[in-house]
Length: 583
Image (cartoon, rainbow, N blue to C red):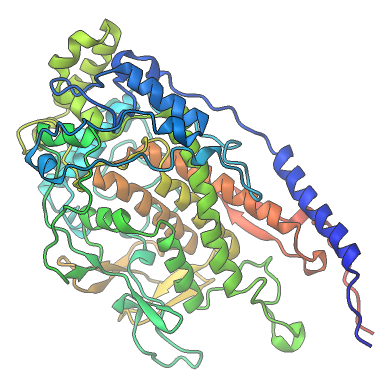
């Protein structure tokens, strides 16, 4: 006779599980949110004011009451109050482009941080430290870095060690105090091998770009025979279709380097989609900073990590040792699929993204409201014009930044006749504040899921001809990596000093996508770093709460190497029952 479960008992257990997950979230420390104090400066000189009306001469906000209405609307969460915030210049466009397009952009998801979630940390329970404030060496260094990335946007990453333009930027950056104090855990002085890279394990190993932004997921079948295409083709199997890793090639053209156009953009002009591309159907592998900026302009936010997951599954990468049902079918008598298999990890790596976005929106809109790099560059351009609107202390701090950048030769690297930041996007930054970064928070969350679910200790072993890739436990005798050719039309295999690990290349993927926004000119380095760490917290919290929903007898647990290099086990303390012997 078939035995059906007791529905009332199941109902009670289900409630108990949900309450336990709620208690896990409730008992987790809820961190205090602390801004850096720059919002108290006159004329909101260091605050995000994009979309409000700005003075044509100074570039500062025209009316500080508008900013207060902006804040009030955000904090209320009431769409009707948000609608009362002044938006745009009421048709008074200054540039030819503005007069032609005549449309404004709305702020993006200003109330998202007020929403609740039923799984994972609450959007307001995680936080980020205050961003570097005006007057700090770190902020000056970050601005110098973004200027340099704009200057070097069209130089192939593979040519960084041989191009004078790169060395000139490095020489300038190395004159700044922040870059001479062992600032990111590496060597005190920047080099062509370390500049613009991430801070986590593996970021400094191998080429600049993660293999997961270049390679495909085919190569050899279970018999070791060549299949449809090799990894060097850059095609990812996605079910019965394929994903091409190549991106549209944008023209070598920068935007917002003229004051009238800059003012229109700050007033909310909607210049999206106005950039030019080399040819209608020309694509290439990510080769330059502009290519990376193009990728993160139009990506589906979690797509790089979904692609990485597909690549790993395509190569049959080993799951973490705590994932059950990896043994021989004869022994286990079941395989992972709905649980502990491909669909599980594919949905999990995307599921965490929406929670990361809500948390970072709260930081952006409700706490920090940090101005974007394009606006800080405008402060440098209008140093004299804004002097009378500010107090002496603020003027001194701005002038110190200006002098430091000037003395380091950063301004001389620019070739458009002023100190505005050349932008990769016509519309400049998005319509939300700079700190934290949405891409970086999602990167931290999604990559944490991947590192937890897969055996992240594996090495990446690429064949000499670039046809296949293996993920192996033993360190390869020769380290190899894929890099794009100088024109980006094909992938080539190079030998590297140290073999790459799965953990390192996933860390590097997170850095590439996050810092790709810096290449576009829309974020600072600290936006990436602190957002990445917050995203990691969100993913860990989600995994901890999901863990209690599984059958304890399966002994599911995950081993994670965090971004700071420490190890964490998720789920090991559930005290699974002793194994029973079948009779």
